[in-house]
Image (cartoon, helix red, strand yellow):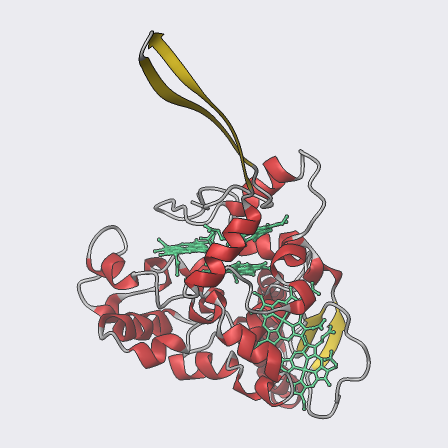
Length: 306
Ligand code: HEC
Ligand code: HEC
Ligand code: HEC
Ligand code: HEC
Ligand code: HEC
């Protein structure tokens, strides 16, 4: 889309330069204002966020808490709210194909992991990537926590399929009309929000070959599509992981008790036994047991992932 707009702008600018040669008067009265409008248009279409502060502000979910308190608190306890603090990015910046001698030399290419762990980086310049590299290498945890998969990542950037989501519109599963339009961004319904592919955008199909050094992290959506669905599975990711729109998206691996309980329910274990005495000689009895176990996975994909 940006590309075609640029081509369009270039054609217009070339046309304007030609008329410049032909008629000086038109240049002053009509062409210069037009030129300004089109330059702004071209610039705006390509404009990237230039500072880390600006990127954080654009995706800051703090204001949402005022009205969506429960969802906000659930989200804050979710892995989505700490999507880069646990991925050891400093190791990759120090050693290997993504390493940099000086954090200021980092560009978006040093962060292929952010395709899913911080997709909003796509909207920023390389200067922002360099700022993030400094934050990570200085172990500035407070700033790292502000870099996450916030409400707007899911409800705007990842919320529609086919085409770019409109800016200044938030997409929801229902988008009833009762939201306070004055204080709220416009809300539209997107049926994509309740489909598994919405989660699949980051939960991975397999190795990603689009990068100079292919990487692989989450592959669970591949397993859902190729194992669960063909064997007759009928639930969505949201159905199993976001019941009643629970934004905690369990499992939360920091809550070990809850994780154990969920795994107990997800992996029912059936045990049948047959015990008997084996008597090889007249006075020798060896107690013997045959144990038959059957573990059934109720998950919608292989577990664990990876
Ligand atoms: C295809 C999208 C995608 C890419 C690219 C990606 N990840 Fe991930 N990563 C995920 C998802 C989704 C999870 C969580 C779910 C899971 O593990 O199934 C995850 C989990 C992790 C975890 C475990 C985090 C925890 O708190 O338990 C680590 C560590 C990690 N990723 C590191 C990386 C690194 C380092 C890179 C880049 C080399 C990377 N990831 C690239 C999607 C991705
Ligand atoms: C990982 C992606 C993701 C993130 C992050 C996220 N949401 Fe959602 N949200 C969803 C999905 C998916 C649904 C639809 C769930 C369904 O109906 O099955 C949803 C539903 C909702 C709903 C409708 C609730 C209902 O009762 O139907 C609201 C309101 C909402 N989200 C607000 C927020 C706010 C506020 C934040 C940030 C604090 C947030 N979301 C963060 C994915 C996300
Ligand atoms: C002034 C109060 C208020 C604030 C602030 C607010 N919301 Fe809402 N929002 C509402 C109300 C009320 C609704 C409609 C009822 C509902 O779905 O909960 C709504 C609806 C939504 C929906 C549509 C849910 C659906 O059913 O499809 C989404 C998504 C959403 N808000 C996200 C956000 C995000 C993200 C923020 C922060 C940027 C935010 N809201 C800030 C009050 C607010
Ligand atoms: C923008 C990318 C993105 C989207 C969209 C997304 N996730 Fe995630 N999700 C991640 C990443 C990255 C992690 C791992 C964060 C970490 O701990 O480092 C994660 C973690 C999780 C976890 C916690 C388990 C774990 O291994 O960390 C669950 C469960 C989960 N996501 C479910 C969902 C569901 C359900 C949806 C769709 C409603 C969804 N996610 C949408 C990127 C995404
Ligand atoms: C039929 C229900 C079901 C469906 C459908 C389902 N899951 Fe799961 N998922 C589970 C269960 C059960 C577990 C393991 C126990 C738990 O909930 O903690 C699990 C675990 C996970 C984990 C943690 C993986 C790990 O390494 O431990 C992630 C991430 C996840 N699911 C994401 C998704 C995504 C994304 C989708 C959609 C593509 C999805 N799930 C579809 C039931 C489901």
